[in-house]
Length: 201
Ligand SMILES: C[S@@+](CC[C@H](N)C(=O)[O-])C[C@H]1O[C@@H](n2cnc3c(N)ncnc32)[C@H](O)[C@@H]1O
Image 1 (cartoon, rainbow, N blue to C red):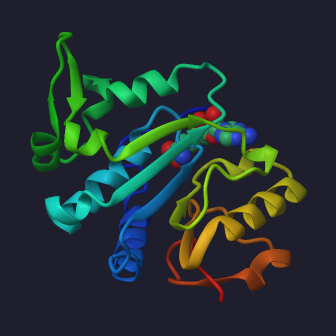
Image 2 (cartoon, helix red, strand yellow; image 1 turned 90 degrees about the horizontal axis):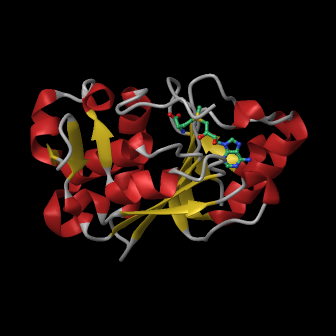
């Protein structure tokens, strides 16, 4: 159930960054929620994409809250250490890998550099409590999670996302997760080739 990998569906994450950044860059802090982050590759991918686009100075204002129900109770440690085995980092483009990873103490393991790790905080969180871990998010990423819920649960969770977003904030799902009809008035589709939406005023 926690299947994930670095640079998964990178086109969608790049589109989210491309459209959200011009809106969010004017704010003091860029608050992002990665809901259902598994053991961290998606949130770290997003952080790397943002760092590439923003440079060191602006990237310091990025705060990514990564949450998961984390039934194994292991994700917090993995994410805070940012250490992954070779087979999990092999898909990362070589130029980015060389910049953002270093050898870890353990043979065959690599650690994400501190600048990127610092941008992420992990919390155990069950989306179905419908209690948001924060508010004023500029971007919420929820990929490959809602498919595990029934239609009523999906609608309630999406309403919670709406309430947790800042005005004009963005929400992104995986390619196959469409917006249910009953909440479609809350968001405007941003592009035709990804499930990327902007909060309607
Ligand atoms: C397939 S993984 C997706 C990981 C990542 N978002 C991606 O797309 O690569 C689904 C994740 O959803 C989490 N999840 C399932 N039910 C959840 C819930 N009620 N609240 C929070 N996370 C949940 C699982 O623990 C798992 O890590």
